[in-house]
Image (cartoon, rainbow, N blue to C red; front, side, top):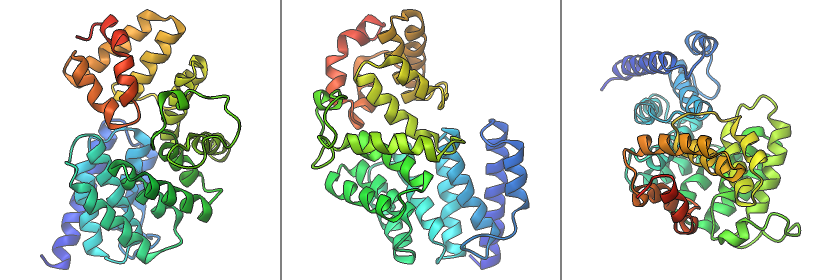
Length: 316
């Protein structure tokens, strides 16, 4: 394929993605205009490659990962157009982890994602976001020590970067080998859970800091792990407050955390609505199917203790 062919293909991919995301309400009219009008790309001489990286970031803001495979295709074209465009390699790695975590690609894609993250870091070793992206790959590979090391490196390089600080909230809180009892130990002395394979307190502190750094809520996915912590300690209203910043109806974790918080508050009708949405999302009312995403993340132990609750809401 010639360079002109790649460029033409890239433009078509970007155009179609913008149209799809806009039609679904995931990109505002202002964002559409911004993408369409960009001509100067930071880190690359190719505007189409830059637009592709922007689209990969918008899926985080929107909370909709249904276009991940198309965005991956777009980003692969971008790395062909400009092999030295580090953001494209990092965005490709991150989009591949999203596609895996949402069940669109198999586990083998994580090895490719790790290679792409390393490529980005080799081009710009001091870019904190690239180290955060790499930590996300290790997170899904369950390589906890490497994940924590990359998260620490990201914070060391950019302690006041809203995107980076927001990002590591997830790796610190929702990963490692904390027991349910440890995760619920909300009032533990500071420093109790900041080393070893259970470091959720680092994530909590990062979440509080991110709320100050990111007043516009540009990086909203941090609210999931924060809600997670508050639910485990029975602070239902605080959990629901975080969930108001990530209102993604139909998205599994939004519905799951909302269901648990509403049940905790005694709002059975509201909890039922969320659990019923989960059944539709999964296409199943089996407890075993509900447990699959829970065991993939940090709710494996809880998925067993919560069985009676699930059954009380119509799972079987």
